Image 1: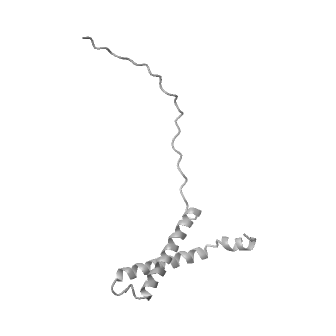
Image 2: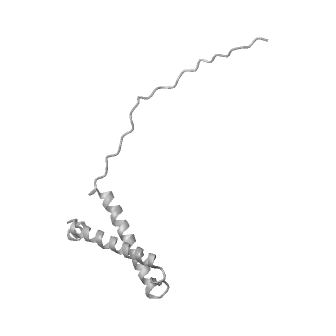
Length: 103
């Protein structure tokens, strides 16, 4: 018995030129996407505070029984107020410009 060696000559596929992966530029604190994410997070915090206050008003939630929930609501309210205050002072008047231009 002879061992047969099978040699295949397969042509390699076409070679593509090597390009290193492009890195996305780092986002700066004033970038639109960062501002939108911060704005959205603040609005979610404000909405959750309103929901918690509503349920506390009708008596479903008692903050004396759940002080951690009360502290969380207070922290979210502070985040909401600080972010809205900062956005108001930043001078970004896009909404007023839209109304003035008739959009």
